Length: 216
Ligand SMILES: *Cc1c(COP(=O)(O)O)cnc(C)c1O
Image (cartoon, rainbow, N blue to C red; front, side, top):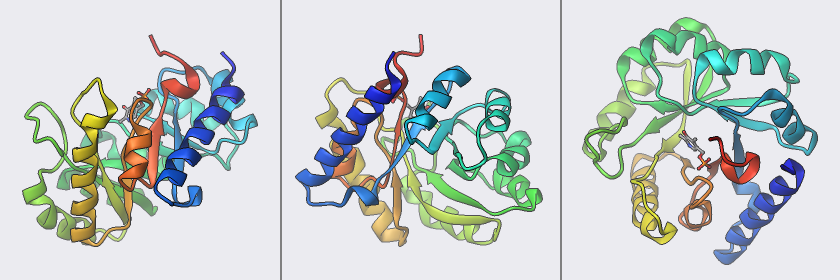
């Protein structure tokens, strides 16, 4: 697994997607999703210049965060149980999965400011976490009551699909919701569909397997 090469290819693909819609690559933050990936591989990515990392479980992330250089930036992208939210806010720089007031109450106890993304259930899938489009304004108002959360934008994990083009309507919908809400950032796009997400306005792409290889 040549992580430096994978990263270089991923960055080149991000630049190409930006060029295709005349966006600047500086508008897009690459989050290397390192869940289920051993520390040595994460360090290899760091040595290749990568600074933003995404993890989805507190227990797994804790030792990694402690072992990595302090200028690594950590994004929590997993389902956030309220009883872990205070600790997550203490360790991570950004939380991408805000969807309940009980999380916000716990984050507020951490005595630290984190960047927050509201998770949107963009395909209205009953089994998925996230706020529905209809309830977004109300939830945004709630978030603004918590100064410990600096509202950054919206995040979504679109419905599963085989063809990246079929994700486009969901990414577009998230962008429209973000504009309506007046937030600037959009966390959307993974290994298979980040190019389409960037064309539709993603500011944060969460990429795991294209960098670190298959997790299985
Ligand atoms: C695992 C994960 C990713 C990365 O997925 P890949 O397909 O490996 O790029 C992105 N976002 C979330 C929320 C994830 O859980």
